[in-house]
Image (cartoon, rainbow, N blue to C red):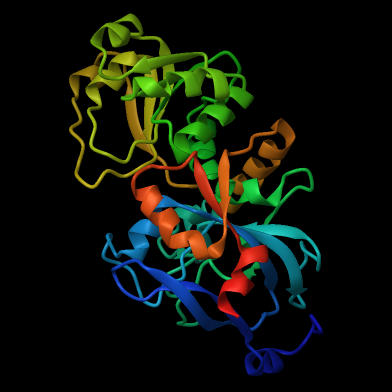
Length: 366
């Protein structure tokens, strides 16, 4: 197909696609045929080979946030190989290894966009379940193909396997960005990571790669061996053990809190040194109680962070490739996706599911 085709020709020949979609709030996914938009002059089309499963996919499939549009094709951790580029695409060629994360569009004119923070643009467009510039609804990576503006395409380094690259486009940037922004990326600092799940285990790996001393904080004593031996954290605290917490008072320069369940912040604030930062990267369903006195006593800060802009996402992927930061994954077939969602709900995965789209999707929809 000619990559310099005219816009008229592009509109007449949309890209046929298929994947798996949720049809209603039951969240059950099944085969679904649809059309991607034709490859525009600034678009990159690619064959999806792998797509990670994020916990937000489960929330969206079940409409637990009240914003889902059906049919809904989830997936914002998709990677693959370029099959076509538009006539004005400058950064990518056919055959390149690429990926798409959580965002596929923004206004390009607000302060956030001008500062490479498209993720905070008031008009940012999510990779699936959102209205695109042309009025169509976006479909995610549980599908065989993807078309996106080159600005929102990430290049995957050759030495980073595609299956592990997928989760980095969500989980990876979610923890990398606050580590950088909060100044916790300097060798010798002591960083705490709350929760040892899909986000937490990647946070440990990035913080270690940045040269930090890392303490994992968890409600589960059973995760100590995993944290210290497999993830090579430096220490482990049981957040319900008052003696352990007391012994670690004032030892952390910063904390990345990845827990999405209700949990107290007071014990975490006590672990921070003066000027320490507690950064929340997950959103519990109910508001958390924020005690003020611990903030005043040491000029401590509580903040939040949501993924990252495109420039930083590329930086994160390049850093991961250079420092061999790879999430721990379980690769599954497309037809296993509903079972995987059930397991995800029970936290029964170490630590991210990745769908082998390239080898299993076609077999289940033929």
